[in-house]
Structures are given as structure tokens and as C-alpha cells.
Image (cartoon, rainbow, N blue to C red; front, side, top):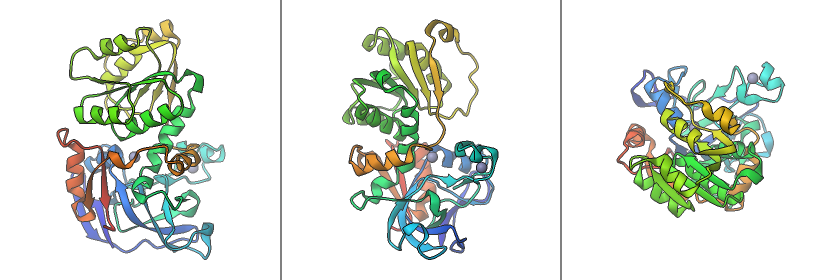
Length: 340
Ligand SMILES: [Zn+2]
Ligand SMILES: [Zn+2]
């Protein structure tokens, strides 16, 4: 089968590899749509640790192609499925305590085991979810990100989620916007540097949008929420956004961090910790959010397809990664489609 692989940082090659062999708890999935995520880009460039060579990708939807043992999980060939980006070992101290997101020996697609930017991917059947028949595979590909957002939102007491600011109007931020609205947020301000994304945010229900490239964004947010925001979500992983997030938070508010920080924050005004008594929630992965993510897709609560801006066949995976990093490409969700 064909797979998009990294042997050395900075280079993606399309090569022929054997179809993965299945253990008794494995299923083989034919990949239809694989989304490019910042983590994949980190593996490609070498700043996210990975066991090279590796097949890229960890967010996908597809159909069951084969089972490691008969009747596994009640799946049958052709079932539409999706899955989180890997599975935990089940035996380390964290797995034993029911905290698989901290697993010390995680099988992480596209990092420690071969990922989904290939014709087929192997998964442990226990983390594979059957998509309801009316949910298109086009939408199912975003399952993991929806679950990650659900996990983050669930941490905050729901009565607090009224006036919200979300930093980052990328794929995650826009899912966050939609889930916050569905959860009863009255006003959501979306903040980003790319006009195309802010336009999309408006279409998807943002009450206000703020472009950080135009003037004092903290003041603009204060103009809308003079007392500050009840909840601020930081989904960019940018140090400057973190400071802004702290600055626009209301006293007694909640800060939710779903961004991954690659760079150190050199200067940070921490006086808000005393003055505002905020609660800060870090949120890693989609654990405890999978069932609700499936339900949101089933209930047609989210607009996922309008966020898909680019589709590439597997052979053009490198081109897709180029678009992901091109700030002028007006890109949001970029799919690699091995079965197209
Ligand atoms: Zn991801
Ligand atoms: Zn473990």
C-alpha cells in the first residue's frame, strides 16, 4: 500500500509499504479522510518527538477493511468508523488509574506507530468508534478534535460559560465556538490574525471577531466585555496570546488552555493570579469526550464540512503540508484523501 512517510525531518516521501499485520485485538481501516494537524507538522519538521521512519497522520475517518479476529467489537467490513489518535498501553500507573491521557507508553499514530496518511491504518478495536450511518466520513474525520474540545469545555462549570473569548480561530477554535454556542454561551468573541478565519467565525456564530494584527486587541475585547470575560479559551499556543488571555479574563473567571506551547514565554505579568483568582484548566487530548463527540455529530449540532478548505490525494501530502503552513492560503481544515 502507499503511505506518506517521514524518514528524516523536513521531507515527506510517498512509498510502498506492506499492509499492516493485525494482532488479535486489531482492526484494519481503509482511510478515506485524514486531517493535517499541527502535531503532524511538528513530526514533519522534527520538533515533535517521533520514532522515525513513521507514517504521518492521527486524525481520520474510514471504513473497516479487516478484523484481527472474527467478530471483533461487532465490527464488519465496510462499517464507517473513526478513532482517537492512538491507544494507551493499559498497564502503566496512569492507565491503571484511568488516566490514559498521561500513558507513558502510548501508541500514538503518526509518532510512535504508523499513522493514517496511508491507504490503511491499524488500530486497537477498543478505541474504534462506529459512525452513525447518516454522518458523512467528511465530518467523522474531525472526531478527535471535537472530543478534545468537549473535554476542555466540560472542565468549566457550565453556568460560567456566558461571555467567552476564544484565542485562535483555526479548526479547533471554530469547533470550540460551535460547542460553546450549543452549550449556552451568550456571546463568543473570536480572536485570530487571519481575516479568512475570522470571516468563517462570523458565519459559524461568533458575536464579535478581533484581528490581532489591527490595533490593540485587548482593548477591543474590553470594549465588548468591559468587566472582562467569564471564560477565556487559549487555542493558539502562542505566548503573546497567553498574556492577552490573562488580561481579558474577569475576576473569578476560568482560563482553558488547549493550545500547545512550542516556545517559552519570556515575560508574563502574573499579577492577575492574585487579583482575579482565576481557575486555570489545562486540557490534553479527547479522553472522556469521545461519546459526546459522537453524539454531537449524530445530532448534526456542528458544521464541520464548511471548514474543509483543501483536499489532496495521498500522493500530494507534501503539498497539503505546504498549504497548512502558508498563512496566505486561506486554509482551515486540510484533508489528505488516500481512497479518493
Ligand atoms: Zn491532532
Ligand atoms: Zn499506559
